[in-house]
Length: 562
Image (spheres, rainbow, N blue to C red):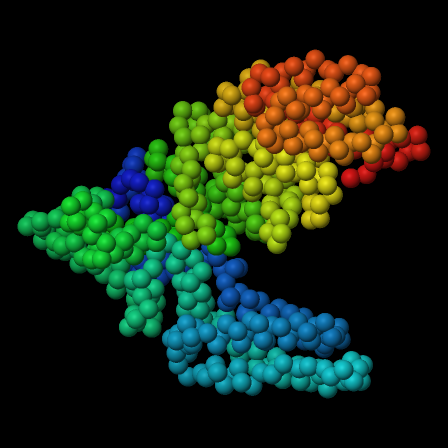
């Protein structure tokens, strides 16, 4: 019986690699027992093909390859109708496709290198030279030149058929897809070795990966290690030398020859066995990436849970991608996966979860506490309404859903965000895509967060809703006295007091304002002196009422429109 290879869960990096390995070979093809997986060497046959096939399967729709071959459908539609609906807009799209897709991608050096591996008998550059864009002059009218243009388009289509069929072939997807993935996904996890080594001698990335990561494992398993002097720093298995270090892992490894100060007593002992090195190469398959941002949930309770929660997140992201909400996909998927785990497995009441994010070429770490999980789980409806909401700060578009989840992940309250949203709305800032109802929902989420954190337990949600209604009546009072022009100044003073945590200044402004209305100040405002969180919660609830829309007036319209 062939000896089983064991790989055991450990820190977040090996766990990400372990999850990626299961994604690549299939969970059903290994034996899982608690914190370990077991498999035999025959599972590594054609592993390099399995490796790239996983990435191609998961990210196929985002590849440049997909942009090239997907135009075939458009071509066939025009051919079926004999170009009856082909117009100037269709010609413009064709020119963009030729210039910005076909020629842009297929003239890249990395793609050119693998053309002979797809078909050594074709000359892709010659095909590209035969394709020219068709541009109308200012004097030409479409109706006059349409027939001539269509004849030229048919000739271009003939050349595009050759190119698209070349790319869409089995080998075309195999090699062009691999090249695309190397520089869009895989290089986010590791670099500097194999096909990501700038001076690599291999043209075939599959052979390059096999030589670097797979072959050493087979050789290692057949080696007598009884006299080995060293041990793998991850699994503690014997190794003959310290050549296989972690320098190829992004943001984690280091050059052991040049940076000896990174290890104890300047003597490097950070080296791995070939098996662990293979697992580390699978880290990009363990993360889920969307537009350069990656996420991995390090549920270290067991391999089954580790695999399950990340699989749910990945599947959610793939589904959300179809909705087109790309900027929030990783965070939406995170919320869905952890809330499903929260509902289905009560052990989340007892344990915190490590979240690893890859953003701006750096790893960021957070603990998803049980308190945060409760808040997110209880606020799913409100969170869903924020998916398409946001605002602009200069040239930066901020998505409210993503911003809110990031703050909760970082264990931050939402007061500064609430202040900003109310201020932008009250000052009629440009690029504001939300209403005061959304801000009210965010205040509700913040109240739940403060209650879970046990820093504000004296004020209930119902009291805050009452305060908000007080703000609405306050505004109505000024409108009825024909003094709505005073509201802007009062709002500015109250918001400024909230921002700098000035309870006395807030109460002075409030007392003066209520005195003008000849109305007693509600007793609930006495709660603001309990602590800072109570002050801001009550204060912002009041400001939401002041900033919201009033009920319909006598003429049936809104008293003020925001």
